[in-house]
Image 1: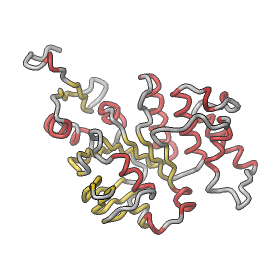
Image 2 (image 1 turned 45 degrees about the vertical axis):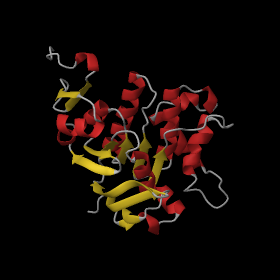
Image 3 (image 1 turned 60 degrees about the vertical axis):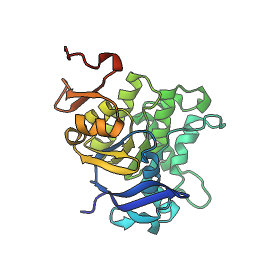
Length: 269
């Protein structure tokens, strides 16, 4: 069986500035795969390359065995849904209208929704717990509500691969866990392959089946959280002291940043 995503010797540059440098990895079908790394390490560019919106200078990305470059935009949109880092809220659409936009790759040439499309939108809104907001404008939503609406739009698209760029950024802890639980539910119950960019190492450890650690566009390590989130690799990548121990909730790493004022002091749990 072909992996959901296969990246082979990928190199992407903006002008003369290389952003991704000879990346190679694969994402198994049905995996919850999380990309981590410092700012400017190429995480968002990598998502865009997988989505087919950025063209590599070298190498290629394959989706279920076929190069992304071989798909039309509409064919890709039937396979891949993207939840971007930022969404404009000053557009005059209701929640239901935005969620229905996920059906655009599937509707006919006249762009008219059928009852099936409306039913799928309701199902997606119910699944993400935003059905009660259906007639509300995007500008009236909280950050957590907005993220759930955009995820509902992606679910309504009926993709096989879901790409998310820092979906928990700027959310409070309760909404962060809610979004991550929702992603895990999609992966476990619907068999969706989820590829997500995150800055939160502890959420990545608790939810990710596999992690990819990047720095300056290069792979530092990939694999299970315990293989990636080690003291040596994190200090090498982020350039700051950390404490890595076992999370009391399970056998996954727990990462604690060490402020300067604690350096040199013995650890007293």
